[in-house]
Length: 362
Ligand code: FA5
Image (cartoon, rainbow, N blue to C red):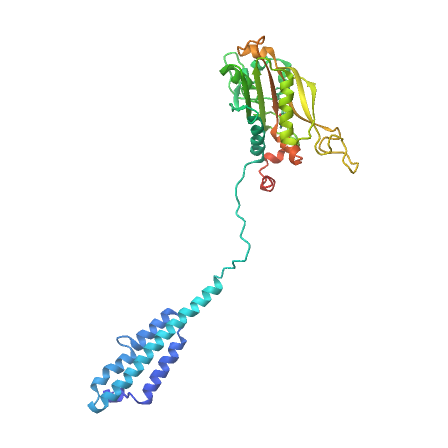
């Protein structure tokens, strides 16, 4: 094919080339196809570039018109190419605005934040109440010696009172064939530890885990918290114990609470008592307004919350305090039981059941 046959600038074949180029351009819908189109028409060996190149080989009289016509097409195609590029970009932006649209009016997704375990919360609440009355907060070992858990608390070897605490013993035997270590069954061993390490006046609160070899039920766990209280000084009387626990009960259960002490037996206190508060659910009546029996206090009007008493002189003497000079009071309570009363929880096993639905409520 000769150059003049090939290049017919003003001829219909160039109109066709232009029409074909524009139609193909219109069909390009991706960056890749657009680039292919550009290479195919405007690239170094593109169809239009070839046309332009061949203008030089035309007869002189045709060259000017042919060159002008080819340049016109080139300008048109270049502009069309840019327009199409813009169009595709705009389309993509509109698509993005649709697919990645943010509805600022939607309510936010709740962020799940951690919180303290209900046992920790109630332990802290109780400790705060005593701290504000001037008690110092201390902690002690959970693996304990028989000596502190029992002996120094006036519970010698083979004393029947040991049966009050079903004990988990550590598998270690001493020279006399006895097992001297255990998981503490109460926080009372800290009474002896504190008194051994400091002189009166003593005023401490000891929160901590305790363990008992016990079948679990709605009110008993084999691991649970206790909070111990101890105050020793010259002239401490039972009235101080009553006043302190009265104040505590009112802070935790409300200003209207009444308290009741009844005789109870613990080898390390004399006299020993259990303390109850009047039931906040039925206001001490045993029955609710609709006449139904109160479940919380089992219709008695009273709820037992702790053991307490005046520190036994033998315990004071055992740690080197002079029982003629010093007196003291002590008490021990189960914070989970207190949380159960306060929040109407009917099974203590929920505390260690790891059910997130329960834990989230606190
Ligand atoms: C004692 O452990 C004494 N050390 C308390 C004490 C201290 C008396 C100082 C006098 C002076 P008791 O075994 O009753 O007492 O336990 C005290 C509290 O711990 C109970 O009132 C109860 O709230 C809690 N508790 C006892 N056993 C369990 C258990 N298995 N599960 C959950 N809480 C328990």
